[in-house]
Amino acid sequence: MSILAVLEQRPSPGGGPEWNRMSWETLAAAQQFARELNQPVSAAVLGHGIERLAVELASQKLDKAFALEHPLLASYTPDAYASALRQLVAHTQPSLVVFPHSYQVRDFLPKLATALGRVAVSDVVGHRAAGGNLVLVRQLFQGKVCADFRCGSPGPNFASLQAGAYRADQVVSGSASLDKFAPEIAPGSIRTKPLELFRESQRAVDLSAAELIVSVGRGIKEADNIALVRKLADALGAELAASRPICDAGWLPMERQVGSSGQTVSPKMYLAVGISGAIQHQVGMKGSRTVVAINKDPDAPIFEIADYGIVGDLFQIVPELIEAIQKAK
Ligand SMILES: Cc1cc2nc3c(=O)[nH]c(=O)nc-3n(C[C@H](O)[C@H](O)[C@H](O)COP(=O)(O)OP(=O)(O)OC[C@H]3O[C@@H](n4cnc5c(N)ncnc54)[C@H](O)[C@@H]3O)c2cc1C
Image (cartoon, rainbow, N blue to C red; front, side, top):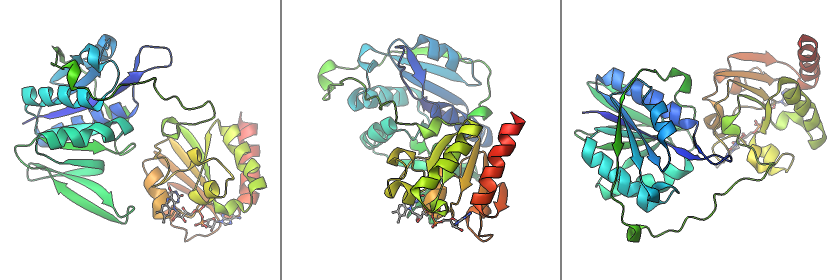
């Protein structure tokens, strides 16, 4: 019985491979599961020309680090990834394999699990150990219900973990033996032809990587007032985000929407300005380390998850906050 974390890398704009930030959250979770279940934990990275990442992986507290190297893994394809991981799973016989819930994993994980006659539990937000077994928790019905999924024995069980559900800074470093694992991949088995990687336009933002976020909701009243919250974000060096009605109205672009139909974020600080905290919004930001809320309604649901709350009129509080931040600089 063992736990295997499969981490994700992709070519950086500079050319070499770089980690997907969620990889470290996945590794932290796998180490935590292993501690609680008293099982060994290993981790794997797939690609081509990934020696630097493999060495970095081997400097974490793991039983083994696996580097799955193959020229046909240089660019992501679901066929090559599923085939390589199937071979690694057969070789290592893990009871649980965990992945970051990235777009790539969403693409190939069902194929991998189904090929082994298993299911994958996606977008896991938490867990508990029960009688030597692991119970994974995921949300259903837009976050209204939490469902428990008991890992079967002997496995393998497959799960992807929601961004922000586990904390990357809790990865325990150490040292692991590095195993180079060369999967057999037949070129004819790959049915898709990777083209150039999609790169978002300059204006597009990856809020999931932001450390500070100032997020604005319908309390801002009209489009022209967004400038006030933008000024606060600039003063803090934060990204600007919003609740859905703001993006639906076109006051900010869709890429800035946080929530069940927007981005999932896990910054160090999430400052919610005039946001009620509807469940569809909360599911996208409750992984934030510290939540600060400004709202004139003391009963707004956002205060249930806020670490710090200011009850009052944002049009009075935000200018004072900007002034105080500028003075403190
Ligand atoms: C299928 C589905 C998917 C959805 N996906 C998302 C999603 O991804 N993201 C998302 O955000 N929503 C989503 N929603 C919408 C969600 O249900 C809420 O309607 C939305 O989050 C509310 O946005 P809000 O908090 O900005 O507005 P409101 O709920 O209207 O809240 C405005 C808040 O501002 C406060 N306020 C007003 N004036 C002031 C003032 N002067 N000073 C201080 N505070 C003030 C009010 O007290 C209130 O709490 C989804 C809904 C559905 C059905």
